[in-house]
Length: 284
Image (cartoon, rainbow, N blue to C red; front, side, top):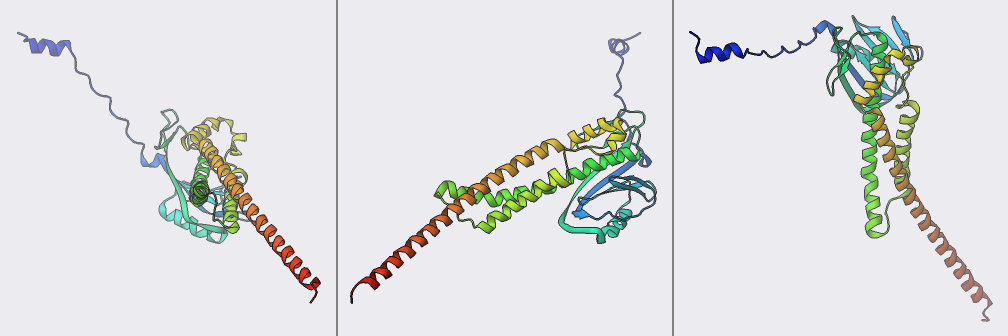
């Protein structure tokens, strides 16, 4: 004879939670590591076996690793062991022009998931149906731009910290005590950042590999969104514009003060000359 409890259990079958997706095996997972080493890497006459791309220079290294070198100072290593990464960095030491300290780094995990759609989780791994040298070049391009932007953001923030006291003095006291050399130094730093972002690095430009592989456009668009390359570039240029305008105002103030001093010196000299002439003309 069935009790009420037995009837409820028959009428209401238990539901089981879906099993979580297991992580990909280690063989299908690669680690990407981007490092900003210097202002420039001399890649001329750099010969390597198994070169898969020349713009940027990309070659196979180790068992399943790839190294991509960008002339604006970034090395991206994908699928290398820590020991192999050290070997690559040591081999590049003599080719670094104006090394930077501290170095900027960016890491990412790339998973091969042939049975799932391509996906880039916020702050998580990059899931690809197939891992090809061209797709790794696209990923390396996004990583390299991200580390360059990180360095430029830090430098611009430092310039802001130096310019802000001058602007505050101008607002509170009506004058600024900054010297021309200090202001010109800040203008120079801002111009260097602007040159890197818009010139050598060309953050807003797409990688050349997309011309031959338009199917990778979608992957690059997702990487661009994940690392917020456009948004960070726009914010950087807005800050550079503010720095340039502030420096221009301070320079104009200093020029005005210098002109006033020169005028006062000229007036004093004319007065002295008149006194001397009157003294000489006065009968003794």
